[in-house]
Structures are given as structure tokens and as C-alpha cells.
Image 1: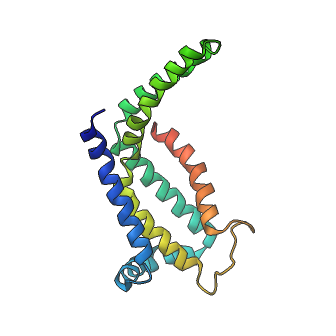
Image 2 (image 1 turned 30 degrees about the vertical axis):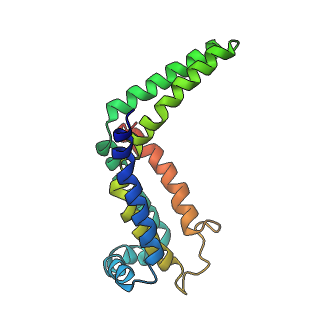
Length: 183
């Protein structure tokens, strides 16, 4: 892999990550950021959560997971990812065959490590499209759930909003990725 390929693949992702961190850190300092997001989300997502917190949050997790899955599916080269995973699977099987030959296993591991940057570049590309919107959404969630009436609220009696989102998104992501055949 050339230096240009690495830079073109990770440079934009790095910029989006830096911008996301900047937005998150400036949320309370630059009022226009938080006010504009509240202007959009309070009458939409806020009303859904006000209607029924658990059902509303579950619906939001499903919608966000569907959007993220579609971005993953159409923002990546699915055939390339599938072929890379197949090659890794073959190498893992080879490593099992040669488990008594450390030199051969080391050689296969070295070859397998060459796939990591390629896999990472292909699978991380959707962050360019979703990084900033997710940061804005999470900052809005932090404001919403820290409001006086919701302080201390727990989903199902023990999940904070973040942990509920994380667990539910993992569960729904597994299901939705199978439905949309995303690698």
C-alpha cells in the first residue's frame, strides 16, 4: 500500500474525527451549535421521546441503526470487504493447520497484518458521512436526558440512555445487517 493510498483513505476520516471532537467540545461555548441542533431536534426527536421515552428511544435506535447500516452498505465496497474477509478466514484456517510450525504461523500472521489497514480503510469510510451527525445527536441526547425531569431516569430500571442506546444498537445492528446483507 502506498503512502498516498493511506493518506487519502485516513486523511478525511481524521479530519471528520477532529471536527467531531471540536463540535463536542464547543457545544456549550458556541451557542449557535447547540441552539440550532435544539431547534431541529426538540420539536422532532424530543416530541417522540416526550410521548414515550422507552418506545421513542427504541424507535430512534432502530432508525439510526438502519441509516448507519445503509451508509455502511452503500458507502463501502461490499464485494471487496467480503473478499478480504474470505482471505482472512482462509489464512486463519491455514494457521490452524500449521499450529505446530511457529515459523509458518508467523509468516501467515505477518501476511494477515497486511490486510488490517486495507480492511480498516474500507470499513471506516462511512465515518466521513456519519461522524458529525452522530456527535451532534449524542450531544443533544446528553442535554435532553440531563434535563431536570429526566435526571436519574433509567431504561428498564438500570440502563442510562447511553448504555441503552449502545446495547440496543448492537442488537438491532446484528439483525439489520443480516436483513440488508452488509459485510
